[in-house]
Structures are given as C-alpha cells and as structure tokens.
Length: 70
Image 1 (tube, helix red, strand yellow):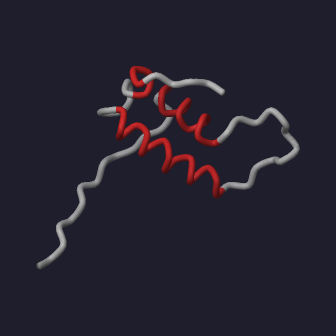
Image 2 (cartoon, helix red, strand yellow; image 1 turned 135 degrees about the horizontal axis):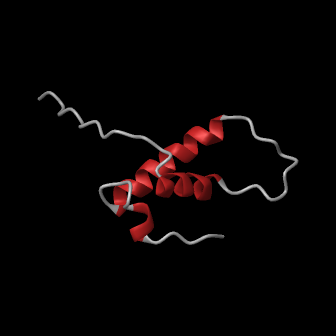
C-alpha cells in the first residue's frame, strides 16, 4: 500500500482536507464503472484516485453551498 504525504496531494488541491474529499468522491465514481475482477494486482480505488489527484489528472471545481431559506 502506498502512503501519500499531505505535500503530495496539496499540489493540486487547496488543502489536504479538500484533497481527501475530492479523492473519495472520485473513488465513488470509479466504483460505479465495471472492473475486470480477474486482475489480481489491481490497485484499490482510493489509492488510484489519490495517485490521479497527485499527478493532476483529476479536474474539479468547488461549488459553494446555498444557505437554507429561513
């Protein structure tokens, strides 16, 4: 299992917390696609998403939340 340092992931994100949120949501998207189960050396989806985030392959944008009407 590869260990990602905060410095690796914040190169393409504003901070480490945002990087983890982006990577986890991307891992959920990857989970929806069919995978070849016959590969024994396949990486985990979270590892794959963190790798792609640290290399800059993932593009994302932050959408501000709307306030609830009172």
